[in-house]
Length: 141
Image (cartoon, rainbow, N blue to C red):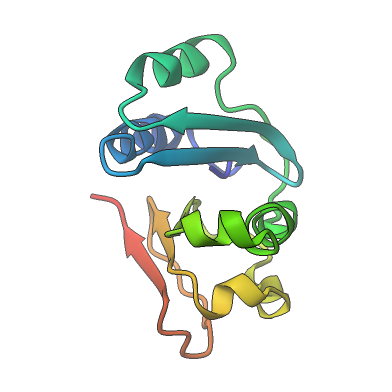
C-alpha cells in the first residue's frame, strides 16, 4: 500500500476495503505500507478480518511522504523471491498506488519477469512496462 502524501484519505479507505476483500481470496497476505520507505510489514492469514480491522484502527497506514517502490520491490526480491520455499508460495504481488512513483526501477527485479503484478489505482495513469504480460494496471471503481 502506497501511503504517500499524494494518496487521499478516501483512497486509503478504498485501499483498506480492497485489502479486507483480499483476505477472503488468499491464504496469506503480506501487507507492506510504504511511502519512500516501508513503515509497516503485517502478515494476515486467510479471513483474518479482525486482525486487519485492529491494524487499521490502532496503527493504520503510516507515511504521507514522497513515493518510491524500491524498498517494496527489494523486499519481494530478497525475502520472497530469493527464498525458494517462499517463492513457491508467492502467487501474486498487488500494489495499491496512485502511480506517482519510480516504477522505472522494475527492470532490476527478477520476480517481475514471471510473478503476476497487479497495480490497482484510484485514478488512471500510464506507465510503459515494455510489454511485460504479467503486469497489469487497473483502475478502482
